[in-house]
Length: 487
Image (cartoon, rainbow, N blue to C red):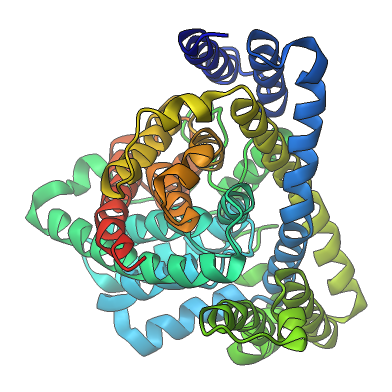
């Protein structure tokens, strides 16, 4: 099969997948499988190996990240049941003060809270951020909204155990310890610089309160209930996104406290009498340190079977999960643990399946020969290939509207090129993650959640979400280029 035919077939399959998702609102899982089947039949795989490659790609990525995603989501579900997020935001406000809260909250969300399913984390923390924004001043709402959008989206694809990060590491065969260390090195300055840039823009007139903010609106249980009903009714999307936006922006009704949502009123025992922050997050922090120790030992050329065992991500996250379970059982009882586990299983199902079918498409793309073709168009350099990876992921995200799917697809397309370029795969993973952040727009469920729960108009959400996360995407790739010189 000619190179031109492979390129055309790949383009047709990806465009068809995008059209099915965006135009005809076909579930992304079905769309991705159909796209994978179509691509396999059009390329050198033919009828013989198409299904075999799809199932192998599905199984391979599940073997790499299935348990990790499940452990992470269950840990996050228990932290939610403990009411740890409410106490954490309150502590950040008291320690750092209102002026620095956007920075501290964005960094905390991006680096520590990625085990919590994104939409759940957003519904928990948005009312708290809205309340805290009043203490910041007249620009409190846009600053907190931008900070939350940047922290939420960056963490998904740049920080372990974000679901996109796990998938990227698996596809590109990057040790999770390495991904954790280099992702941490990239995400901290990315978040700080991006929040600073958006703060500068807001102070220079980029925010118009009259046009961008629903000033009189308060957080309300009606909004939370309606958004969560949409989440439960539409099994679409992973982590950062859903590909079908709500038919209209959801505007919170005035007055009232959350009725059945995850705010402080919903779990008074956990919020008021729960464990300290160190006890709540201690097991997760220990797990991340265990994973990082493996990467440090590898870099130092230390060989120890015991250390290798305990630094294995599956073992480390299992330790974190068991520790969090013990804490949750002690403070909420058996019922609290069962509730958290049930919720975690429900949340993890769609994440696991969509991540796996993204791996199927990546496997078919690679097996179809696109990597061999692209290898001839690159030279052994670092800067240009990383920019190309970023561009591919950015274009896919604008089209599909899913941070995770665009990152996985970009990595799958370009992973075969990495060995010929002499580029460390972790750089490709981070570049794909950075590109997938570009232009979070109205096809993203996160966009509408931020718009609704933080009292913004659609125009305001375009500034605090679309522009802010795009700024983070550009900042990330600009920071990654000099970081790549260290390899």
